[in-house]
Length: 357
Image (cartoon, rainbow, N blue to C red):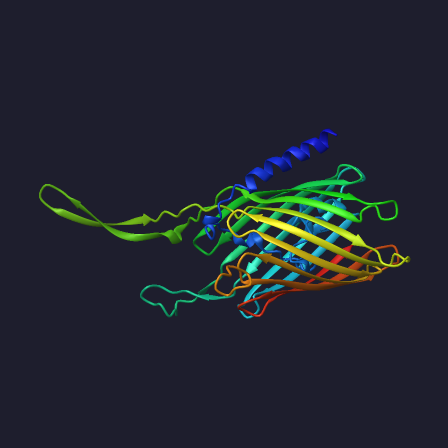
């Protein structure tokens, strides 16, 4: 009971922090790659499965779900972000159960590639000086545990790095989440609830030699004026992280009597501190838990109007998963694919592979 009370108090404190965001500050947060879901399975839900997400992918939605890892899980994913833009995202993760009562430890990394970008200056706006590659990198360390038969909790510490060759910024963020599973004797986890607070951390600030330049300074004496060259460093402003609160629920339907078919209905609400709030609903159908199809729609204010839309995503997403068992009751592998509709560009495509050992 003490553990449950502690988790409840943490969530209550998080609610106050997340709901304090001022929507008039829309667009003023940085490190917006923290809002990107790089995983092929959960992105087919448009990230709406806060209540039911499990394994490595839970580190980007609700870290409490990491506790569902049975032994060892390895996941890799590749995303073509805004097809046609030349941006790609690579993500990899690993989770390991630490004994029957030791919880689960997880590690994940996400990197964004922007391709080669021409170096330009005020005197050479067309380039010709070579190219550079921005580097966006997120490294996460998570721990999650089953506190009872129905309560899961966890947290994530994430390092955030954004840099080019001579300018960079670094920050730290913390996520915390809780899941509650309940049901009947036949399906003890058919109903799930989840709440997660994400991206609470230190402000970030760019610095480096790229913000300095050579300038002239004059010194006037009693009889003469002298000019000398000095290095001047420009100041950069701090920026906040895009904190948010996810609240979700899901329910499993099992048509027929065989129990081989599952239909999951999920709903989610996201309170963003720096952008518009979102509410969404999704469906997933599974056959023998070996073939799964999912579709979701995530709505926010103005998304249906080209004049008022502030998000490149138009709300619709879909995905599928195919599980290939190595043995009937042993390790298995899973192939995942997702598509997220956008306007403009040609959508977002993700493909991933997962190994359950």
